[in-house]
Amino acid sequence: MKDKLDQIRESAEADLSIFIKLVAPHLMLGAVHEELIQWWTRSESKNNQLVLLPRGHMKSKLIAYRTAWWITKYPETTILYVSATADLAEKQLYAIKQIIDSPIYRRYWPEMINVEEGKREKWAVSEIAVDHPQRKLEGIRDATCKAVGLTSNTTGFHADVVVLDDIVVPGNAYTADGREKVEAAYSQLASIENPGAREWVVGTRYHPKDIYDTMVGMKETIYGDDGDITSEEEVYELFQRVVETNGEFLWPKQTRADGKRFGFDDKELARIKAKYIDATQFYAQYYNNPNSEDVARISSEKFQYFDKSILQNKEGDWYIRDRKLNIYAAIDFAFSLRKKADYTALVVIGVDHQGNYYVLDIDRFKTDRIVDYYQHIVTAWQKWGFRKIRAEITVAQQTIVKELKESYLKPNGIPLSIDEFRPTRSLGDKFERVSAVLEPKYDNMQIWHYKGGNCQSLEEELVMAHPPHDDIKDALANAISIAIIPKNRVGTFSIGKNIVTHSRFGGVSY
Image (cartoon, rainbow, N blue to C red):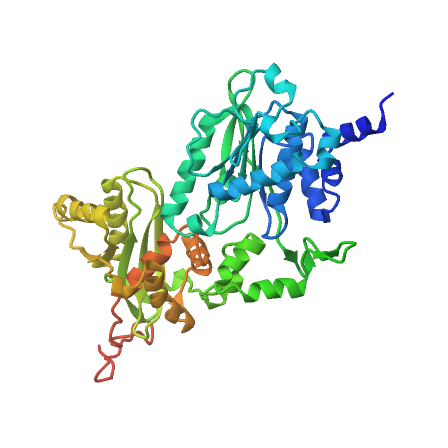
């Protein structure tokens, strides 16, 4: 008959919640933590799990306990613990060591590590190897748990489990270069994972294009027993929560027996929010929403619409009812030698004599072929008849424009002027330049959209502080920047079926 100690030990190994309460009786767990623990360990769970919780909700603490629990269940395991920096990862490994080396833990699992630290196989700042006999039995040479920064060299390690704990931080989230480095480092991890390896990811959103957004969108092809493709599934299963919903908090304030309080309430959240100079960061980190409309510079209330049916072409000129429009276009190239990474957007606008700007057409496509750029530009030119198109120029895009002019437009006799725009530092960064053009005009209700189509994508870009794509918004700003408002020339206008008046002298012409 098993004694009580063995029963407790077996129960703790079978249930992560019991394990945590056994080795950390001081820890205050809320309903969300119990829910997360059950989600992590349910029988139908996927190998790849992504948890996105608000800051201050113990996700890193709980993943440390889960790691210690996994080592307890499978002492022969090999775990790579990755954080944004080596220092962060080593702090988490220190927490794991504290769990395994605690008196409570050693009472139930004395075989896991030698009591004397100097006699342990490995007990260093950046890696540990437990002394359980199962490791020697299976000839495991890699560390039980190795802590590394995201960009560290992990070549040669063979991981059964990869823990990714807060790999996105302010230092790598807010620049394209930082995000690309995270993506590159993340991609390398697949090479050190053993077959059937697990990935446990915990983090908080910082930016719409961060690696967590990429993970959510990842798909894997599923093959049947006959080798045929049967379906496509998400690579990661997702557990995502926000700090509060309609005033109901994810982790409401709790008071421990010693009077210490944990969790959140209105007062606590307001105190935190007040310290955020950039409100978008607050909504990203506490609501997992890098693009909350609460902080939108251009709100959806500023959107107004015209009916495309009132657009008319008269003898080559475009009119909104009786208002003649000057037509302009702009193209935002997304040219990369490495990949078709982003969209190219071509926006056509019209402006009337009252300074109203109408978004007439939005063409959005992916390509890295110059002939495709030409075909899209010519198609829009043939329809709308604009004589000038602005293109924002970088080094790579300068090559595109030169090729378009010399090899496509001139040889085909197309009278189209390309306005090459090279932004200078004095104009500010791209966000500042675009905002300076668009925000005043939306505030003054001068811009009109058409309903549906790619205008929906434009509206998403406008209300988001950090949109995943900003190509349409950029092209719209550039088109407006070159637009010249037409003079108010009434000219001739119809007052009846076949009666036309003269604008200057009046009367009726026959």
